[in-house]
Image 1 (cartoon, protein in one colour):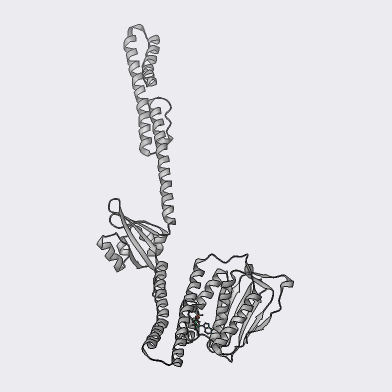
Image 2 (cartoon, protein in one colour):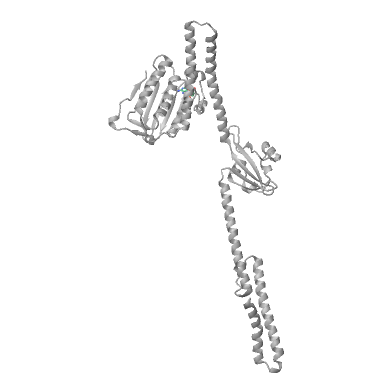
Length: 454
Ligand code: ADP
């Protein structure tokens, strides 16, 4: 400010002093006054020009570029420049924060849609685009109700009661491949809405599976229980001789056995689901597993067919599998047991253990039994799925065997393969990855290449 006053005074005093020295004494007074006045106008002109430049720059919005040197306008321009820089920094920071925030919403596994007070779409993430089939260029600022026309959602939206969510079919929903989306609206701000959507197809499927499972288990247990209680009533109410009593008790024992097998298979499945993965460092001898399977196959075929069945074991000796011995035995014997149960006595069953060139190994059971029609193959490993219901029950099947095999295979990083043709028999195989198979030292090798359960 001092510089401003000094310059204003100098602009008048200096020219007036110069005029004082050069002008005749008689006209010195008025000339010096006129010169001082001119100096005053020049100063005012320069000052107004600088102010006007500043105003023009501020109006143009590029005040950051001005440089008006010293003085009042220089300081004003400097202050404006600082304020503009601060504002630009704040704008950049908040734009960055907004971008981070939108990126976080974009990364959300849930669909997010922001709606204006008049229900127009202001923003949505990729997940929401997938759920509702939105297109960012086409649907921005469109009325949400025009794009999502599900009647259930329309009723929910009209009710304005957003305490609960609403479930509606997703964009890719079809009868063969149902897709369910849960939509929940949350009011915020002045009439705005935050809409969250979630794909609950898997949850719904799991819930349906749980219901089916409970229904299946109840059904499986109810049948032998009904038979058992019927026999108990008969024994209580009828005077039976010893032979008849013995017959009834044998039938009761077989029903009790059926329930026991079912419970044991259910426990096996729940153990498989709940226990940690089989270790990679615990090695089980394939020959030992097969020796146990030979014995069990002999016992099962004697029970079912009253005489041994022709089961040939073709085992490449000297290998081990990394995993759980009990799970591996259960899976392998389930396949052998099925072959025994679904193959007539006069037909043959072959069990193979082969190690392939890439180090992986295949355990397979090939039978010449009934075979399975192609439409059943994809569903065979579902719990309680049976092709031949009566044969399964007669032979003590629970419908859980292949589900157990599939589980065990998955837990060992192996794959279950099924090939079958009606009338031509079946081949069930488990392919173990190379990492779970190793050859044992020569001296430990046994020559059990062919064993027979016959
Ligand atoms: P189950 O206890 O009924 O045998 P599984 O899960 O082991 O249950 O098998 C499912 C169904 O697959 C069986 O009910 C049977 O109809 C069919 N199946 C399994 N193995 C064979 C086989 N080797 N030959 C023919 N059908 C088979």
